[in-house]
Length: 180
Length: 296
Image 1 (cartoon, one colour):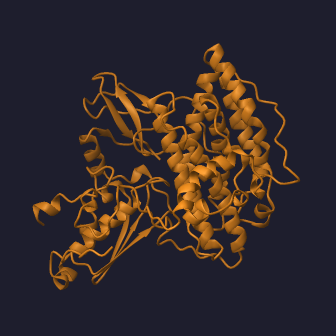
Image 2 (image 1 turned 30 degrees about the vertical axis):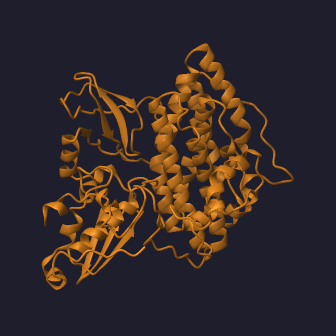
Image 3 (image 1 turned 180 degrees about the vertical axis):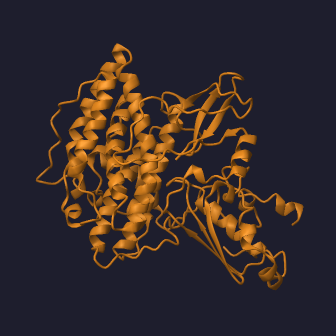
């Protein structure tokens, strides 16, 4: 289908020198967690700028992330609006995304939106991956009232990256970003 | 930037002024390996690598479909979301592996070609993943065995000589760790539960157990792919330790049911399946085959 593309918001030549592609890409929100940006989540891996051509590299959080195309489209849209003539969005799988890559600012934004940020991911020793037969023993503070008296109610939640918790102090349910 | 542009979100881009029309969020698929170097090293047999990717990809694709059939049938909402997320992780793994196959053999076939336009005998999945679970106990029994085995396999695959396969495996290890814990915790809860739950859990393990031996039977494609494929015979010890730990904690007996034999020397990896696979493929493929030019 052919649809007229919107005219660039700024003069392309001016944009080439004045606009920092990284600064533009870093403002794009995550489609599933719109309170944080792709940069906050650590899924924006790199932005390479060469005059009016930009190559952006992103990585999925989980293998089945259904938002990769959305993310790629949003990045292309934002950068084209900022005046870049050619925008290439690449996927990178290695190293695999870790919740440790969520920035301090990202963690604060998640907590402010009622989603508990992840604990540090377990460092893997040598030998087989350890089996956990009891619900994951984590300390998770309630993002609403701050209480540490919380329990996991489900190991998975509405998206692959979260588990479901409940605060025993204020009784509110909340989501927790799993550490991977 | 204007106020309107500040409001930009993914949902806005579905609107009239977008140059990328789709009917809903999450539709419209692009190559899951877009931008990744998918060249095959000169000392790796591309045909064999493709066949191996199809084996691992078909395991995940078929099992994901069986798990998706649990939607709206799980005992609790929490289990529904767990099963959906596990199915989604496996579907993601399948998409990357099928896409890898099409690049490795040089055919350029995409994930949809492999998922929708192959006949039953061209599928290379193990027979364990084909069956419809009779009840929730059977679901967690099968998931425990499948995820324990696949986690050990993917862990070994992280050092595979094909960097794309190694990267897919490294992502999968993190996901499969959660799948295995989920299944193991349920097996313990049901095994060490009431008289009825214990009896059902044991019966479920007995039903699934005949399909276990096939998981550790090496296929010529794997044997030929030195430094790329994992030798499945080496996984048995690790898998046994995990399963025995779960059975002991759950106070269940390790099943003794006889293995499902190959037929004339052939089993799932050779395209020889149980009748259950036909039902999966009928549901999975019928729309794509009826409307081969459709996009979504």
